[in-house]
Length: 119
View 1: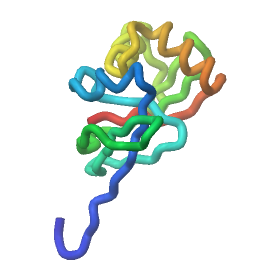
View 2 (view 1 turned 90 degrees about the vertical axis):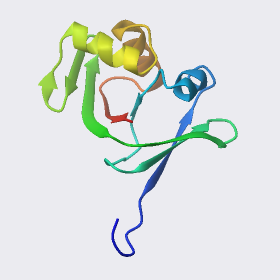
View 3 (view 1 turned 180 degrees about the vertical axis):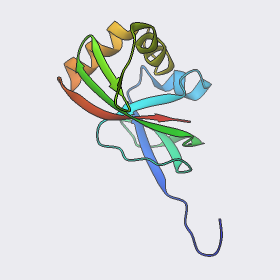
């Protein structure tokens, strides 16, 4: 960084079931509705309950995600295959695409528009 540029930071809070995966590095992405992150931003991973951070990373990629329903997902304007949905779900700490879609539907409802944030 040059001069007085300040690197932005984004706090990502996690439910207790996901914390161990993020801490260990097994989970290297999250899908969020309201969080705006850009490549290069510092990501502060924190406990949802206390807000205390437990890991810091740098955002390496962001992609737009639109869950139309439990079986249809659009990433950056492209419909994605079931295999791609499974890979996305596993990278986010879920067993498969069906488990991720169930979580999204139960938590937010469909359609769901969010951002895939990777580190």
